[in-house]
Structure formats: structure tokens, C-alpha cells
Image 1 (cartoon, rainbow, N blue to C red):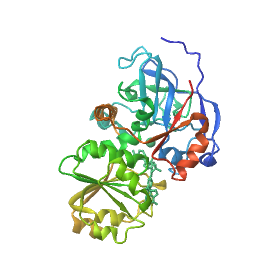
Image 2: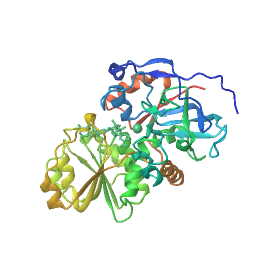
Image 3: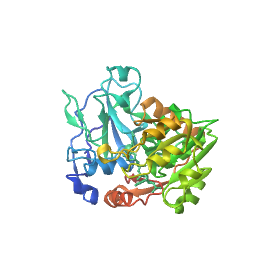
Image 4: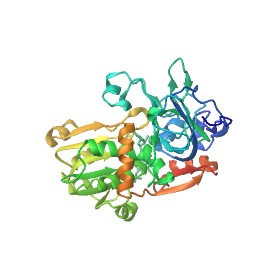
Length: 358
Ligand code: NAP
Ligand code: ZN
């Protein structure tokens, strides 16, 4: 048991204008303590595209005030009596999910991200008798049930590990589940935070070829530097879909626009290929998909949500073993508002990580 005389404070969104640089620093109540919980003194928190969708209420009404941030790393400072997996002083992390019912078929099958009663790390309600909002990691402290708290391997620095907890796992999970590895040619649509992890992990898993697919030609040198074998610029390469038709087995789509050229992406798939959508547009709206593209191509379209705590641990181990270095830019926690504006402007190369000063 450690001292509990600390305050939970963080950047709070009070209305949709918070995404325009209007989060306000303030105190908040975490979930009610119970003996399965872990309190974390946050050292780092990555800045995910989902944070902006939530601040703006783009996915539906956000329960303001809301403290976003779900790529949390820090030190365990208080650990419940029932917790076996973590001890005070451990370096730990929390991704985008903070709890699940633990009893439904999906939880029992190890598919916690699909639990109907799952609790997101921010903007969800913990169920009675513990009813309290979940609050995220643009903050000093975080409280999360231990089932969703993972240990950070010694070989990974905290700033690099933080964005893997959502950005990394969201692409690692579908890459792994869909056989990205030797014998597979993998395309990554949208080389942003998630997409850059997808390039790194697809290479680490041994895919035959990894192709970055973004809009502008200007990103090409960076994406090749990340380790991609090839690059397609959908705004700038003439006839990009025809010229690269049927050249990929798997596409992970991290872009989240209702206007993106989905039919063109699908034409890049070889017969039997699969596109997995992970980018989550406001309102859930995707571009229309032409049935003949699916039928004639013999292709599949699916989706994937984050990953389980076990997959997160597996990914962190792989990142440690393969010495995966994400491209991050550290910012002071004080600069959270400007950082959100810069993310919205597409400036990160490729993930901002907010750091609390010691
Ligand atoms: P990000 O860093 O902003 O990257 C998004 C990328 O999408 C950009 O780099 C951009 O690539 C591309 N893009 C943006 N607008 C586009 C358009 N109109 N057409 C085509 N491409 C476009 O964001 P992120 O953190 O990677 O998050 C990406 C998405 O994943 C968000 O919607 C986020 O909410 C979602 N997400 C989903 C899950 C899940 O469980 N499924 C988990 C985490 C995040 P270029 O500029 O290079 O073209
Ligand atoms: Zn996220």
C-alpha cells in the first residue's frame, strides 16, 4: 500500500470546442477505488486520432467533462489487494480499453474489445455499483482495473511504448490475425500514427512486401525510410489503382474519411485478398463499396477493434526483441491543446507523446 495523497488532474474537454485547443486543466474524480484497481502516476501519454473524434463528439455525444488520452504509461503507485499481476513501483501501461464484463461469450473467448459492456479508457461509465466516468491520460494520475493494466518490458522506453498501447495494437492485432508474414504482400492505407506502426509491425512480422499508401507524393521518402518497400500516392500518382491492381494480399486501412477512394484501395487486392478497416470515421460513414469490385475480385472486407491485453503484451515483446523504434515527437503535457491542433493539421511524424515533468 502506498500513500494516496495525490490529486487526479488533467486536461478536460467541456464541449466540442475543446478540439479547437480549448481543453481546460482541472481536477476530476477517477472511478471509485476497488481492490482490483491500480493507480498509475502518468509519465507519458500518446495522442491518438480517437482523442480528437471524442473531444469533438464526432462519434456521438461525449459525456463532458472528458479527459482523453488512452496510450498511458507510468508507475504503479497504488495496487489493490486482489491484484497479483502488478506491484507498486512497476512500470505499467493502459491502452484504449479499461474494463469489460468478463462474463459474456466474447470476454470468455478472449475477445474483450468486442464486449457489449466494455469500458473505454475515457468517456465510458463504469457499471454500478461503481458508477463513475472513465477518465484518460492527459493527466497526472489514472485509475484502471488491473485486468487492463500491462507491464512495460525493460527494453522499451516509456515514450516509445505509450503509443503502441492503442496505435500499435490496433494494427498489430489485424496484421497478426490476417497472416501478415512471409508469403504476404501488405498495404497500409493512411501512413499516420496507426499507419506508421503498421509499416513497422508488418516488416517485423516478415511480410514479403510492405506498401505505404497515402495521399501525397511528398511523404514517399519518409515512408520508405520507415521500412516500406514501395509507396503509392493516391492524390498524385496517375492511374495508381490500375497500375497497382491485384498486387496485395492484405490491406489495413487506417484512413477515416467518407470520401477516401475505397473502390481504388479494393482494386489493389489480389483475388482472395482482405481489407481490414480500422480507421473510424465520424458517424461511422464509409464510402460506398461497389458489389462488383467484391464479387469479381473475390475479396473480403472486415474490421478490427484495438486488441486484447494478451495481444498487447505479445506486441510489446516483439517490439522489444526486434528493437522497433516508433517515430515519435515528445511534447510537454502543458502543450496538450497545441498538440491536438497539430494532430488535426496532419503534422505529426508520426505520433505525439505528452510527457509529464518529474
Ligand atoms: P492520424 O495520425 O491522423 O492518421 C490518419 C491518416 O489517415 C493520415 O495520416 C492520413 O494519411 C490519412 N487520411 C486522413 N484523411 C484522409 C482522407 N481524406 N483520405 C485518405 N486518407 C486520409 O490518426 P491515427 O491516430 O492514425 O488514427 C487513425 C484512425 O484510426 C482514426 O479514425 C482513429 O479514431 C482510428 N482508430 C481506430 C481504432 C480501432 O480500434 N479500430 C483504434 C485507434 C484509432 P495521409 O495524409 O498520409 O494520406
Ligand atoms: Zn487510440
